[in-house]
Picture 1 (cartoon, rainbow, N blue to C red):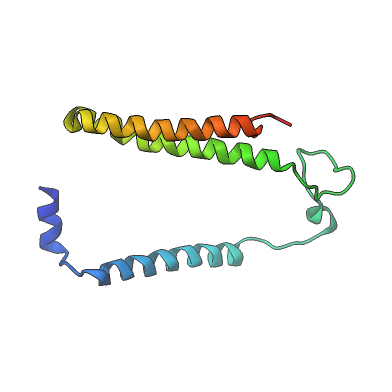
Picture 2 (cartoon, rainbow, N blue to C red):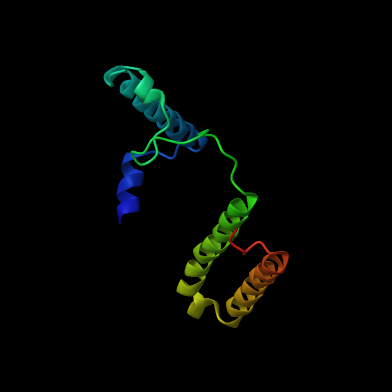
Length: 128
């Protein structure tokens, strides 16, 4: 019903509508940044230039290198977080798709499980 109403008022423009949408998004983003620069006060100072860490003055250099293990842990979390994004739509249409979808998701989860076992054996899950 709603699509019929929209189609009567908005003609099919093809790629022109996509370009218009991208242009409007760009204008909106750049406009928001420009308005914030024009409206907000700018008063630089010594105190404002210092690193802020929960209200406590920093000790030593503020730029420190983090252990690469933290990044590996975050990437592994991201992989399994994306897995959930793929599992939810599959769970919604499981009854319609039948046994084929079930077999495909078993293969998908098995590949991810093998990746988890590989990361575990390499020691990527050990918190440093």
